Structure formats: C-alpha cells, structure tokens
Picture 1 (cartoon, rainbow, N blue to C red):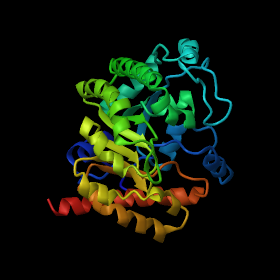
Picture 2: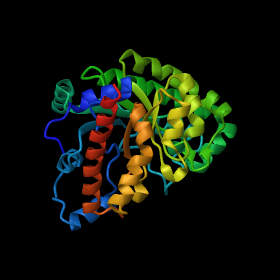
Picture 3: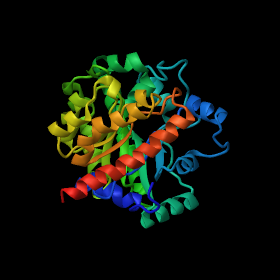
Picture 4: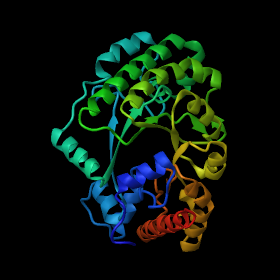
Length: 341
C-alpha cells in the first residue's frame, strides 16, 4: 500500500465528476457495519471502543462523514412490529405531526471539524434524506403503504409534500457549514425482481417532490444519489429523467450488473456493486470479483464498495484481506488508466 495517495476528495471528484481513475479510487465502505459483524470482529481481536470513523481509519479506509437528517424524533410512536403502521389515516397523521420534522440543529464543533477536513481534502462529506417512497412506508407500514397509492392517495401526497419541505430546510441548513460532496435519498423501492411500483405511480407520487428538492441540491452543486436495494436497473431511467445522478448499493444477489449499467447509462454514477457473498471465500474469489467489476471502474463514475453491509460471515482477517486487495485494485486501475492517456 503506497504511503502517499492523492487526497480522497480529489480522487472522488476525479472519479465521480470527470470519470478519471488515473489517481485511483476512493477506498470506502459507505454503509455502517452490522452489529453481528462487529461483535464477531471484537471476539477475533478488533480493538474495542472505536466509533465508526475510527474503525474506518483502523482498517485503512478513506475518511467520510455522513449526516442523516431524521424526519422522526424520540417522541414519534414506534410501530408494534417491523413493517407495522404508525398511522393509518389522516387523523392519526395529524396527531403525531408535532413529533415529526424536527427543528434542525448541529454540533458546531463537529461541523467545523468536518468542514476543515473537507477543505483540506482528507475526508468526504455526505448527507442522507428520507425519500418519498421510504418515509410514507415508514409511517403507514409496508403493506398498507403499497395499498395507499390507490386507497389513500391524498395522505400519501401530503406526507410527501411535508418530507420535501423538511428536506429542503435540511439542505439549506447544512450548507451554512459546508456543501456535501454527495447525498443519498433513502428509498429502498426495489426488490429482487424490480420496482415495487410502476413508473406511472412514480411519476404521480414521487417525481413531483423530487422536482422540488433537486433544484436546491443543484444550487449547491451537491450530487444526488438514490439508495435502493434490489434490482434497481429498471428504475434508473426514471430517476435519470428527473435529474438524479446515481445510485447505490447495486446488489449483485439481485442480478445487478455494474458493467451493463455502465454500457446503458454512460454518465450514471454508482457506489457499491462488490458482491458481499464472496468476501469470506478467500483471495482467489476476491480477486475474481475485482476483475469482474473492473471494466465499469475503468470507465469512471463508479466507486466499488461492498454492495450493502459487510455480513457476519466475513471474519476480521477476511475483511483486512478485502481492504488490502481494494487498495491494490485502486493502484491497478490507476496504472491502466494512465497507460492509455
């Protein structure tokens, strides 16, 4: 591993904005680690007491700081079980409304530290906002949410207008401290056979609110990216058409192919795509996976990373090997890119 690398923010800008991998790629794990994964690693010798960012540093990953703007508060009622509803109608939504969309505040010292790290190029900064598929589902429950597109459209649209207004406030607030390098909308609107809704429903219930939020992001030159699991390839044209620029995590188990996406969408930005199911299978399997995704990486605008969270089957030594090979892969694609300049 080289002692000196181009600062991570410069690598990010080169790769994601200009398609240039000649200085290497950012070495990141964008998602937090599973609790079980960390528990296993602690039993295998990982030092205790590290926060997420210290853990990244420990493994030799590049620094990045995420700020998630939660639309709920500690006073918001909890569902009775996973996927159960919090509210069932407009009256119940009115009742919990005082617990939603909180005032936006920051720890000034933390924000100043992040702004300084961004300015010196040593860290990426990003934010996450609840999207107009994700948030109504959280309030209405998984099954009732899907029914609400037909049975309760006015409530759906009211929630989505409220979340759009909150998100715009959040963007304006954070940009008083720094301008995030990118952001994600939490959506999770696909499963392993494609989108959970039709494009017609997308255009009616989601696109209008994106068309309110995206100009604010563009004003601050913040790169908008969708976070959705499952087979996301069918929905890429929908988001591309309204001005979203990319997607993550690109789950291989759902059939997602980063090389096919790059061929079909040359400017589309991607993060993820490295098949997490091979991470515990040894060096040969890891190297084969890096070679599989190499054409898309060399084409630019793609940062390879675990295609969701590192699973508990991946031991501490497995993960250290993965990170070492990711550094080697970054150097390899940089050399190949420079060789054709």
